[in-house]
Image 1: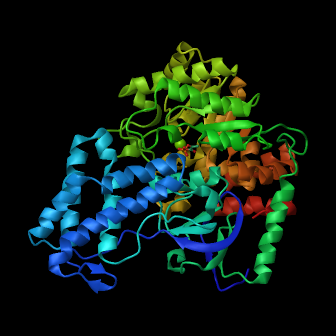
Image 2: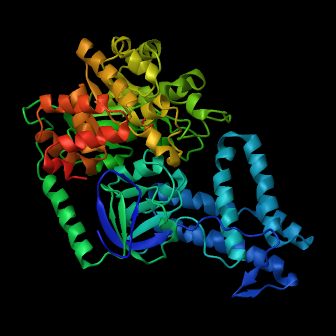
Image 3: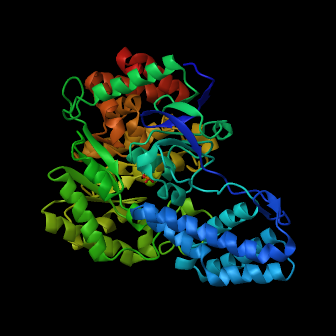
Length: 564
Ligand SMILES: C=C(OP(=O)(O)O)C(=O)O
Ligand SMILES: [Mg+2]
C-alpha cells in the first residue's frame, strides 16, 4: 500500500476506515512555576486569583456543554467531571494558596493532591472519583498554561481518534457514532478499550508506533485486519480500501448458520456489553450471544445497580435476542476492570487476586443479586439464559457457582475457562456445569505469565502460543468426554485462521465482535472438519506462535489466507 507512509500496529477484529485524525491530547507537562497565560500574554500577579477562578469556571462550563450534547454513559461521565471542576471547596483552596504567593500551577497540583489523598483514604465511591479529579486538574492546568484542553475531544465530524492510550473512562466519554476508527500508540489488543471498540464495530489498531506524531486533521486509511495505517492515502490506496470494504460487505451476505464445508456445525455468536449492542444484533446473522459482559452496566457507578435495574436491563437484552441463545457472564470486576464497590482495597497483584467469581468471598451479595435479577429477567421474558462465572479455577468453585445459580432459579450454568488449572481439569469442571467457554485473553495471560495490559509483551500474549493451544485442546477433550459444549469467547475467535484451528481442536462455538463474524463464517465454509483438524495439528506442533500461524496460513485455501 502506498501513501505518505504506512504505520503498523496490532489490528483488533476487522474493519476499514478513511478519515481525518482527531487527537486525544495527553495530560499537559507543565512546570509547577510555569507562568499563567491569557490571550498569549502572561497574567500579572494581581490578576492571578481571577484567572484561576476563570479557568475552573471555563473547564466546568465546557464539560457541562459537552455533557448536554451527549447521552447515556458519555453524558454521565462528563457531568460527573464538570461537578468536580465546580466544587467550591477545591477552588477555594487553590485561591487561598495563590493569594498566599504560590505559583498557580503548583497551587492547583497541591490542592488536587490533597483532595485525592483524602478520597483515596475514604475509599469506595470517593476513591473512584480520583480519576475525575485528576482530569479536572489536567484541564485547568492546560487552560492556565494556554495549552489545548486535554482528554477526549468533542467530535463534530466523523473522525479517526488517535491517543497514546485510553482509559476505560476516556473510551466511555467518546461518541462512538462519530468515531471512524480508534488508533493507539500503546495499549494491548485485549485491553478494555480495544474490546469496547470491537463490540461497537469501530475498527481499532493498537500499538501503532509513531501514530501520536501524526498531525491533527491528517487523513489516514485504516485496515484493522492487517493492522496497517496509511498516512494520506492516494487515490489508488483509497480504491483498494474501498474494494476491500466491499468484499467484507459481500462476505456478510452469507447468513447461514456457522458450519464447516462438510456440515459440521460451529455456532457463531456475538460478544456484547450493553442493551444497545444487543439491539444492534436484530438484523445480524449471529446465532446468539456467546458473551454478555455485564460489568459494563456496573462501570463508573458508586454502587451496584439495584436488582430491579439489573432485571430491566437483562430483560431488554433477552427481548432483543428473542429465541436466540444468550450466554450471560456474571460480574467480572477486578484487575483490568476495577470497580470501587467491588475492589475497595488496592491489591499488589490484582490479576491474581480477588477478581471475577472470587468476589463471592468478599462481596457475596453482588453475585446473589445478579443471579436473582437474571432469573427474574428470564421469567419475565420467557427465556432460559445460559449463565456463566468468570475466573473459575477449580471444579469446587464450578459446583458452588452452579448451586448458587440453581438456587436462584437459573437452569443452564457454565463457567469460563481462563485459568490453566480449569483447562487441565476441564472434565472435572464440566461434571459440575452444563458448558464452558474459553476466555483466551485471560488464558493467554495466565498461561504465559504476561500482563494483558502490557502491550509491549503482545508476542508472549499471542493466543497462537502452542502452550495456550494445548490448554484449549485439553478443555475441548473435557467437552468430548462429557458431551458438553465448549465455546471460545476471547478475541482469538475473531481471527479466521485461528477459528479453523479452534474448530479442529474440538471447540463447538465461537463468539466474537459482530464485525468479525462474516470472515470467520466464510473461512469455516471453505474447510472440512478433517482439514481443520490437520490445521490444529500444525499449530500445536509449531515451535512458536509466529511459525504456527504462518504454517496454518500457508495451508489454508488461498481465498482464506487473503483475508489478512
Ligand atoms: C473473554 C474474556 O474475558 P475478558 O476479556 O472480558 O476478560 C477473556 O478473558 O478471554
Ligand atoms: Mg477474561
